[in-house]
Image 1 (cartoon, helix red, strand yellow):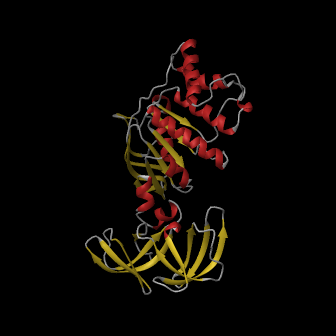
Image 2 (cartoon, rainbow, N blue to C red):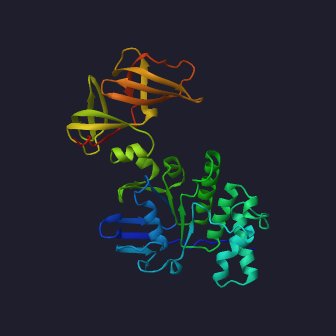
Image 3 (cartoon, helix red, strand yellow):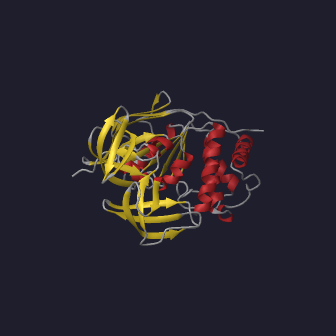
Length: 359
């Protein structure tokens, strides 16, 4: 039986910029390497340059400055038709008058395969995405998740060196998003594909990626594994964009080796110094790393401003002298109530130092 294979290649950007006119920089001097066979997500808010970066890989936008390589081949000036990449669009872009099999076969007709091979490859693609037996249906007879899988199959059968996804799950409901992202990740790992994936959804990026590239203002803010970015953000933007984070002003009172002692009012906490020296800084603390105890204790005095039961946990808005923080606790049996006096402290691991706020 015909099988789909991977020709995975690396992607490299060398000082790439994209300008519109003379002054608008959609992408500003980025250098980036994406390893062959990895799934790398470009993550960031609207207008940060992530989709433009993706489209420059595809050849749908041309770089104004710098060079782009796919494998060892310089593709900077090549049109989209001469690059061995496939793209799955947010809108799926299926032909409504064609059957599922005809949609998946469409690109193969221009690749030199005869009718028998084209059909065999298309059927193999449908089987790979769990849609064997759906070939004679029209797109309108499929659910949103099934239509997305047809779009993935259509891209996969071309056996591209790089597979690109542009906000592929944005049209699906929350439950279906989880299912389809797991399917995309499974296919990527099974075939060893090079995938570049654009999203603004932090949870989606954490779930599917080998590495995440966080973009801000047309440039790269930080690049790393999901765990690195979540547990060791470089600054307040990354800390707050990759999951929620409480940003608390602190004073670094002492640094001994790789350990810093920070002070908030009369409370002190020790944590990795991350190259910081004495002086003002901020602590980025995930809501699940906040610790609350009733009454006075070793920590910072605070008051429960809001308590929300969300089934598996309690969510608290807590007010202290330094400001308001958000905490998540698993105890739903004996929750705090609004107005309760509590003491805030932090888990032994998890809080990280980031630069102080700019004046």
